Image (cartoon, rainbow, N blue to C red; front, side, top):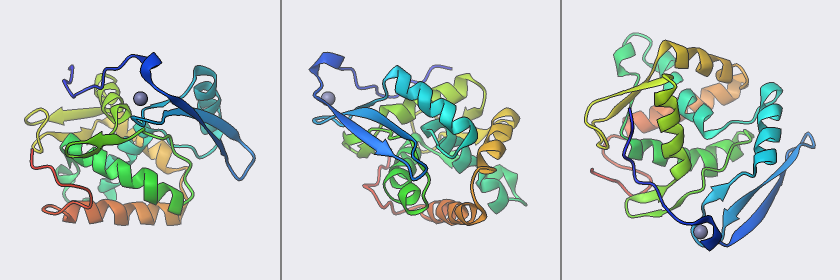
Length: 201
Ligand SMILES: [Zn+2]
């Protein structure tokens, strides 16, 4: 079950943390820390707890939520061919989440956890995404088949993960859902070109 995705090992005291404060339109506020040099993101425990409590009744999506959603949204696209509803390769998740965080979520007013991207040789990379995938696999929300750490590695939802994803989806408006379908379709059609640097691994 253990994935050997590259983790960035660095002592926390070597980072130069900067506080980022956020306030949502309904008045909910929180903060997180981002390293000015490597862009690693940390949510202090009490802030994380606050966000988790808030997200029970309000729209605030974690990286884990987005991974489940991106997989689930394929269901409405591949309704006649459920076997096509997978996402191939962890690099694709990294790229999708990068655009989700910087474009899709802000454009569609969806408060989202900052995955903390840093420059990686194949494009932006986030350890939080790796960790979220590891978590979802060990929690049996997603399953992975194919060659590990390659573009042939296929991620898909288990029934349990699908139930969770349905619940997350129900928090989105009809318009946000339609946009998400477009987003997923766009990526699935994009088999040879990437918006971010393409990895052929
Ligand atoms: Zn740092």
